[in-house]
Image 1 (cartoon, rainbow, N blue to C red):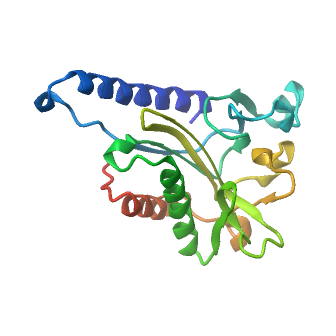
Image 2 (image 1 turned 90 degrees about the horizontal axis):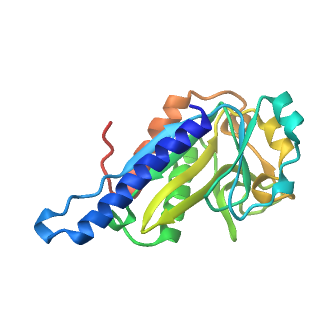
Image 3 (image 1 turned 180 degrees about the vertical axis):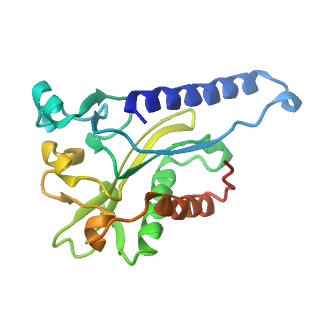
Length: 223
């Protein structure tokens, strides 16, 4: 799905949840309507996105370079610096009212990371966290060759979330050479396919990931 199209759809759902929360505050207790929660999985054509705390110089391509790579570029309203989205990547956009779960944005990010970590464990890949760096990493303990396999950047307003994570499955990692990924210049990026030495069915990974998200958030996911 085109990045802008997905962003607009996210924003529509995000705004609808916020509007419902405002209506509920004005309504009598018996007239309040439960807020819905959404989990979107998709992939995008080649695109670079820059979070509101990012630095434009971390994109190493000019307009002509972007065209040559068949990529687009957006400044967006999530946290974090610059990242890449493209084919072979699972991009997850949870649009959740955290008041339905817990009101702790740090716990929210850690649970998303944990879902990725548990999914990778099913493929025999040991992943984890590096202190002070959001996302999921390999070689996170010894840090001889630390490499990021999943980037995260979220927005939260009135405990409603949007944006999310980018999980490299079969992604073309050469596109990361055109940025300073998440503003981190001394660490590499990897994918599940690179670590295993072969491509992995995207839908298979999505099902495993969805299962872990549902368990960690104590939720039932319906289509």
